[in-house]
Image (cartoon, rainbow, N blue to C red; front, side):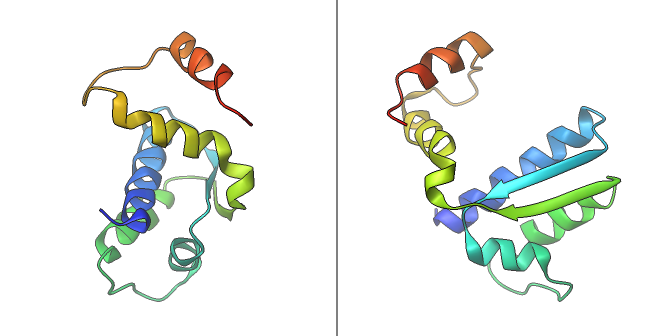
Length: 109
């Protein structure tokens, strides 16, 4: 899967989770400039991830505030480290907060 697709899927899941949690104001951060442009644009996206982008935009309408922020990759080290370590986690398993703390404590930031 392309990195842009993975980030789009992660963003959709994050917005969906925030909606289920009842949050009203969210900031969705990512380091993919192309995805950021697509999410910030009012034009329809006809690319390979267009359906995912439309889903995210639709979900975003449920929030008082939903900001899509572009962050530098260096500011996104925790996410990259979690993604890199996710390959060792069994699909469908759950990481408890204490497991995440342990994982993050071993990351070279």
